Image 1: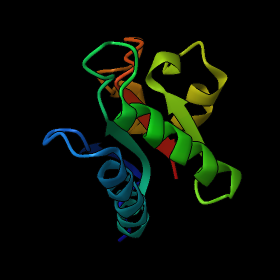
Image 2: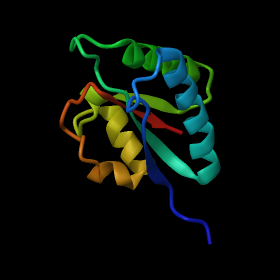
Image 3: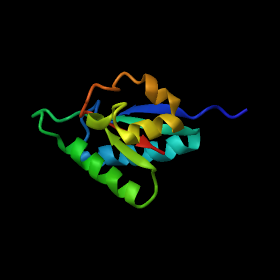
Length: 117
């Protein structure tokens, strides 16, 4: 029996990697998430020590935007937009029910990004 689509959570910043290494982790986890049957991945990338958006965050989001344009992923929802008032978030709920219960919903956390597979 196939398991229902789920939310995979990945911390790509815990050991303070370079932005290039972080993007490689994103690539691996998108492939792995698809293989495991995940509907979405929550990437925890932090927001930079200056509070203005570190390289891991900016490079990860730039890369994810490319992947969406190329059709490799369905959508990208920034932590700042992860809200019941956001159209993309509500559409994502239909694909991944786990998102409704995520602790970052309505927290406007710019240290995370949600990827819809």
